[in-house]
Structures are given as C-alpha cells and as structure tokens.
Length: 193
Image (cartoon, rainbow, N blue to C red):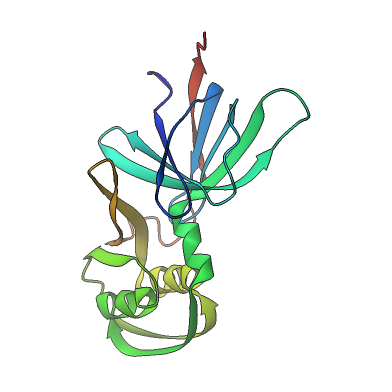
C-alpha cells in the first residue's frame, strides 16, 4: 500500500483524548464486507482495553476499539483493535418482532438501545424477522442478512473528536449475499527516530 502509516488519534473508552498512538513498523488493516474490520500493529505505548483509535482512511474517518494487547516484558506492545461496531456487543435486544417492516424500520429497532443512529438506509422492500435475546451487533447483522443489505459504519468527526456514530445500510452489491473474502492493507514500516 502506497503512502505512510495513518495517524492514530488515541481516546479513552469515554471519548476523552489521550494523544497520538505511534505505530512502530507496519500497520495492517483487514476488512471484510459486513464483517471483520481490524487493525494490528506494534507500539511503544500500551493502550488500555476499550481505548479508541480514530484515523483517516483517504477521506473517510474510521474508529477502532482496542480489544487486546500483547505486552512482552521488554520491547514493543502488539495491539489488536476491532471496528467500533464491536461496542454493539454490549447492547441487548430482548425481543423485536419485525413483521412486514421496511429495512429502515428494522434498523431503527435494533439500534434503539444503542448510541448509534441511522445515517442512510436503502429501499430494500419489506420483510420480517424475530430478533430474540441477541446483542445489537448480531441483530444488526441479522437485519442486513434478511433485508439483503451491506452495513457500513459512518463516523463523523467535529472539533477533534467523534461527533456521531451511525450506520449506512446499502443494497448488496451483486454478490448474492455471499461473504466476500477479507482484504488486508499494510502500510509500510514507519521510521521512528
């Protein structure tokens, strides 16, 4: 991948800015359509589990949450972070009977107990699903599956911090609902003086 390692703006789990998290070596971004979205890299600093990393990918803001660090006794810390959609694992849907609903109605129902909103929802017709005892992330994926959509998180930044988190649900891009293979982008090793 051409270009330099993106700047990672480092926030705690309550969205308070900590500073910049310096990447040492390569940064690998792996992304699968409506699925995996991870960052892996090494750093001298050790972020806490739950810390947030905000970065600009071309013209699109992305946000990842630190889910694991590998801290040897001496040396660099390995950091593994997932898309901020993983926070939806903590929000629970007791029951949502989505009978003859539009995708927009279904999306609004599964995002209701979260801090996420709907940025855009394609007109995908009406369908139905029973969402029962699921976390909001699985419920979101179920809506995408039943209505034939692709989920994209939309992160809006203002004043140097995340202003809003929302979901864009587009019609499947002709893949027939099949899972696309993950793609990995690697930014080259950064020179650290």
